Image 1 (cartoon, rainbow, N blue to C red):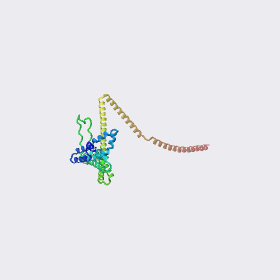
Image 2 (image 1 turned 90 degrees about the horizontal axis):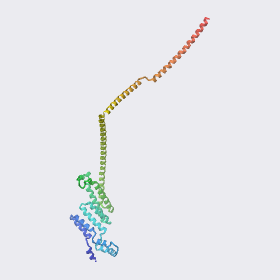
Image 3 (image 1 turned 60 degrees about the horizontal axis):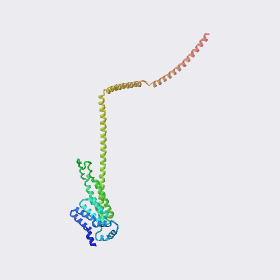
Length: 345
């Protein structure tokens, strides 16, 4: 029975499949190596038969499930998570050697997730971090501030072409791609250090990733400052442009008004009348100013009134003195007359 099962359901074993992948990758045939990995991971005839046999409850399902240990012993059971992790890790190595870093990172991530505690998980974590760090270094070289060449401007869409209805998508920013790669590398190297704090390579790579992130942060800061300056200048230019436009509009309106006035004779008559009124108003104002000046030239009536009062007081004193003198003279005359009367008698 065991022989029949082996002959009926035998396929590529894990060990032989991994060996084949390694041989093809070393020979410079990454596509063939990846095809071998897919063949290992694909469900075989036995897996399909087992799935059909256990799809419904019954005696067949009970027998097949009870025979799982026997199937595993002869290499017919499905791959375990650890075995699948080994295949994904091998795929990651093939892809990394082919400089397909994005796909390699995905393969290492799957291996890391499926592998249990042990060397395979540590290796997958380290290689995932290293792949991300290498991607960051590649993208860093494309940053203009670090000597890289900015991506060429997209060609305008051809009329009627596939992009005629919309603008071409902007080129990816190398700084942002590098930043994402360095962040992933730093986090995975830190995870590797938590499992093995004595790993000098992981520690050095963490410091490198952190240094690169600080460098990119400075570039981002300068970009923001330059962007703000440009926006301020654009606003200033726009304000000046609006002011010039408003001034020109006002001038155009005044010119148009002057032209309309020149064409309308009634407006000319009105303007002459207005001139006469203005001249008369100026004459009236001049006369008023002259009158005000004459008033200002007259002596101060209050001061004159004050001097007159002083003179009146002096005159009253003089009159009083004279009145007293008159009274004495009158008295003397009366006495003289009385004396002459007595003498006549």
